[in-house]
Length: 220
Image (cartoon, rainbow, N blue to C red; front, side, top):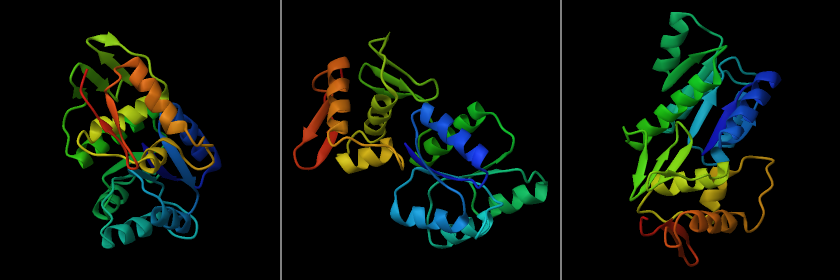
């Protein structure tokens, strides 16, 4: 899952980037409003974490412009502005949620998962596919009731496919989901992750659509 982090405080930004990457998110971090606009113009994201007090262009102005342009991806405001009027203004400007600093990473992750479910039109927290049960909140996977250990990127790739069970996802789409800026991507990285998932779960679980990408096959 690729997210855009817009935060001008170097310590907070670096800490959040590390914490989110450890949870399997691909994170692109920018530190001003203009850079946030440029990033969204050139890369696909599932969610934006947006500070308000930004250099070059205030976060609320950035958010308002996005909504006027018809950009509907989820935006979670992260800010030290804790007045009720600030919260109301943020939500009325188009934010999907509003979290006051300082906050706990676990609460941030829970709010992110809720926004992503809502945006995808899902209410359930667990993704089921045959004997597979993938729980993003607990970062667990079971097959026939038995736990299966996956790497963070294997988990994210499988989650992407389970969230779009009838779709073919290209290698580029999967790379965008699994890797953020500055993260080295080997030319066969996706193929390696797919091979590992087939080996750990079932050979026919992920089908290769030659020249296009990958889709889910028969459930185990």
